[in-house]
Each structure stands twice: as C-alpha cells, then as structure tokens.
Image (cartoon, rainbow, N blue to C red):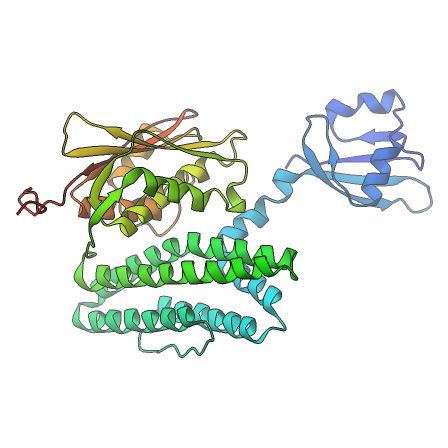
Length: 401
C-alpha cells in the first residue's frame, strides 16, 4: 500500500522515484551509492519518513541501471505477524523440533506435542471418543496427555447427555477458552526454545528449557482441568488461600514482560501491599488475560506502558486491582459490548476477546466484579473489585468460625 520504486544508475544516481516526497533527488541528480549497495545486499534502508524499509533489486536488461523496490517493514511483515497469531502452536512445535533434533528426549517431546496438536484438532472437530496415547521421557507431557484424555472423556459424557445444540455450544466455549489460555504458556515455551536454538551448546539454556517445561506444562494441565469442570459442572472450583496480591501482580508482570511479542512495552506494579483470600492460580490467570489484552492494545503505540495497580477502597472488606494501558482505547459502544460479553470465538481488533470472558468468569466466581473505562486514543482502565474474604452465597464471611 505504501511501497515505492526507484530507478538508479550504476553509480547510485537516482533517475526516477515513485515517492513524490523524494522526487527532488531526481532533479538534483542525487547520488546514493551506499543505498544501492545496501539494496544489492538485501539490507534494510530508511525512507524519507525515517521508517525502516525492506528492499529488493533487479537490473534493467541492456543497461547498467537497477530498479529498487522498497516497502515499509511494518507493512511488509504485517501478514506474517497475523499468521503468527493463528499458527503459534505450529511455530512452537517446529521451533522445539529444530532445537531438540538429534537428542532422543527432545525428539520424543516434540513428537508428543505434535500428537497433542493433532488430537486437539480432532477434539475441536467434534470427535470426543478418540483417546490420546503419548509416551514421553518428560513426566509432565504424559500427565498433560492424561489430562486431555480425562477432559475429552468428561466432555464426551456431557455431549451424550445434553441436546445437540447445547452440546455444540458447550464444547465451542470450552474449545475457545482452551485455545486462548494455552497461548501464553506456549509462548513462554517458545521463548525458551528460541534461546536454545540461538545457544545450542549452552547448558544453562537447556536447563532453562527444562525448568520452563516443568513450570508451564503443569500450568497447561491445570487449565485443562479447570475447563473440564467448567464444561461439565458449569463452574470452576476455587482453592482459596491467603494471598499477597501485590506479589501476584509482580509474578504476572515478570512472566509477560519477557515475551518477545511485547518487547519494548514497559510493565510495572504499584500500590500498597494488600492481601486477600482468593484462588491465587485462577486470579493470576484472570489478571494475565487482562494484562495481555492491555499489552496487545499498546504494542503498536511505540511507547507502550501497562501498569498493574492495587488500591484500597472505602469498604475495608474489598480491594481494587486496576490494569491501566496507554493503548488506542475503545469507543463507549465497544467498551459496553466487551463488558457485557462472554467467551468469544474471535479476537477483537482492540485486543479484548476471549481473555475478558475467562477473566470475568473467574472474578465473579470470587464474588467480585469487573468494570472499565476507555477513551479512543487515550488508553483503557480495567478495574477488578475483589472481596478480601471468601463469601458464601448469602454474602457471609466463610473465614469466620
């Protein structure tokens, strides 16, 4: 849409240029040998707007002239980045396979993950009767496969007991939630795999990958168990404990800030130390989803910033958690649609989709609520109001004897 073509002689003199802003170089007889050399080597150049552009060069037959085609990097790579979001699982598996090839344990791990990919596609197609058989030297992989089989069996029973339309709707919601929740852990595994690819002889890189697999694969298994309960029982059981909320927010920031897709975005946590009786794993998952949405909305802003804030309220029995970003924001209508929506089959252009539906369900399961404010071009603030104590259905404190 915004690329240009220029015609240059053998010594780099510009004869013609498709960019009106740079045609002055033609009349001035501008000589650009360095640009010509960079284009011959396929290196990036900088256009008149200061943008980095990809180049391709071809000579004109019968002359010593060359045609240089240039296109802004952001435009040239936009399709690849869109494909990356849709094919992230395949990319991870391919990267892991490339890194671990030649190592028996690595080959086994990649093959197991590839089987899981094929199996989850089979489940997504509606065939819940197929069982996954995985043999791996990594115990977490076998455990994850067992969890997938358990989830599939539970869904299969639920599928037979309900009407056809209800069965399809339930599985569709579970599959959507599964696809979204697997994203961040898989990206973390991908990041560790890329480190090994860049440093194949580095023992610390291999140790980091083993640690990541041991940390993230159980997390994936936990997501599957939660989704199984959600599909069969309509809710997720809470395992509450006294939790330092500020520490939990810092864990979220530490996990997300190292992902390459959000490189350049500044994450920070602020506010006084606060504690509450919550399911730390589920709350971390909800806040991770909302923080990822915020990061997605700021990733193209250049100076992206996402702040997680803890604040006290007038009510001593509750606290506020805010996720603040300086992204492109939303209109009032778009925000109202997001706040009233649930699980979604596609991701919205403003960076809010499946993650919000999952987060809202978790917060409401704790007896809390989510509200938000947003301004086009001015960023978005999502606010979670959470009870400090565990309450029963009548609003009574369950922590008191």
